[in-house]
Length: 254
Image (cartoon, rainbow, N blue to C red; front, side, top):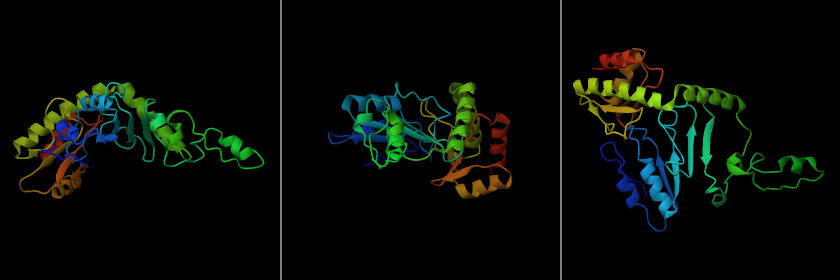
């Protein structure tokens, strides 16, 4: 069961209406990839906790740019790859599983990194195949670690924490406000919600005469990289982008 998007937003009421007595899991995106809409995780998490429904979050489009508190939001599990807002290399990701639900979850893949006594099982004269899981979320780590990728991701996380996630969010708010005002003045429709608490670092637009693909190609010719998602122009600045660059993007668009 899927909640519909309405004018670039995912209404909390639509999500809650899908939950019934048989519902075991509510899975949501922290931020929608094609609109930039930020869902109310706190409200959803409180609802799930009261109903004993597992609350699972895909955080890839917001983690590293927006505050994210698993305790405040009552998140039971979340995942996020490192190559987007976390500024890490591809192939290195984060998985969080709350201790509250660990014993209720069974790994679907089991490898040598998932089990507790793997060294003993291969050092004896006969292979024992002891599949007792490791403590904590480590039981979900089935294979060999991407050591180089994790080093890069660790350095990126240190950088983000040093700058401060709240400062990054404030910076993106300033850039987004400038971008939306300038493109609205040019006749663009802002798909992304501008309501407090619903904004993110993703800003999506449509133009009455130009397709998203045409606009992406136009900017690429000028050395500006953006993307097209679901027929919308998507612009996603981060902490390293400046107000001057945002003005340049708006200037180069028709």
